[in-house]
Length: 381
Image 1 (cartoon, rainbow, N blue to C red):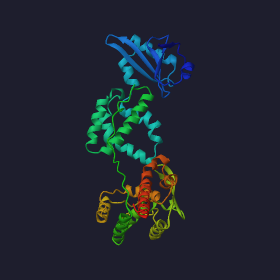
Image 2: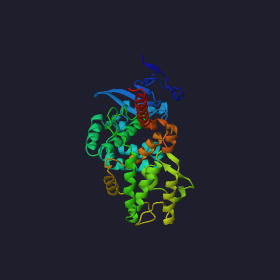
Image 3: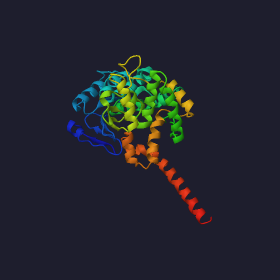
Image 4: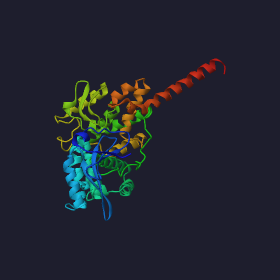
C-alpha cells in the first residue's frame, strides 16, 4: 500500500530506514515523494506525465533541499517555466564533475596519500577517458562491463582495482539521489592468484647464499640485497622497508608512520637490527636506504635484479610479497599463535591471518604420521 502524507522537513528527518526501500508520497504535489533506502539515505523523486510519457526528475538528497523549495521546482517543471530535461541536466552531474566535487570531498580527500595516488592514476588513465563526459545517470551496465573486459585483457589486477573504484563512485551517486542502481553491481572481479607461496628452509638458505654474492657487487646491488633480507626477517611490505626513514628507527623496533593499515610498530630481531645499523652508519641521508644517485631520494628494488636473484636461487615463481608469507608460515610452524602472527604482520584482524592456519595443520598431520609409524613398529604392525 502506497504511503501518503503531507511532507514536512521535520517529518522527513524522522523517516527511518527499513529492510526494503520505500517511498513516502506528498499529498500536496502529485508525483512528489521521498525515497528512503536501507542505507538510510533519503532522496527527492518527482514523476509527472508528459506527451512523451512519464518523466522522472531527481532533486537530490532530501536533507539538502527543503519541502517548499522542491514543491516550487515541481510546479515550475509542470507549468513549463523550467524545462524538465534542463532541470535533470542541472540536477544530475557529469561523471567528471561528480568525482571532482561531491565524491572528492566525501571520499577521495579522506584516503591515505598512497591510495589517492592510485585513484588519480585510475581516474586519469582509465575512468575519465571512458566516462568523464557522460551524465552519471546515463552510464549503463553494459558500458561498464565492456570497459572492464577491455581493461582486463591487458591488466586483470588493474581492472579489478578500477572496478572497485567505479562501484564506490556509483554507490556515492546513489546516496545523493543521482541514480537508482549501481551499473557496476554484479560484475565479477577477475580471479586473483589464490596460491600462497612459502619458502622452505632449503629455499631460504639458497636465497641467502645468492644474496651474499650480490652484497659483494655494486653499492646499489648491495643495498637491494639488504632490503630483500629485511623483507624476509621482518615480514614487512616492500614499501615499508624501501621508504624507511631514520626517524622511524628505534633501538629495537621500527615506528612506521604510515603503512597499509596505518601507523605500525615492527619489533626487530638481532639480524634485522644489524642490517639497519650498518646501513645507517654508511650515510647521513634521511633514508635508511638512500638512492645511490640521489641520496635525498630512497632506493628502489629493480625487478631485473629480483628476477636474477630468484632465478639463481631456483625460486623463479616467487614474488617479493611471498617473503612476507614466508615469515608468517615460519612463525606458525614454530608454534606462534595466530593472534601474535597477526600483530607481527600488522594485520588489522586475525581473519586476515587465517590463511596460514593450514600451515600448522600440515605439521600436525606429519607429526601424527611419524608417531603412528613409531608405535606401529613397536607393536610389530
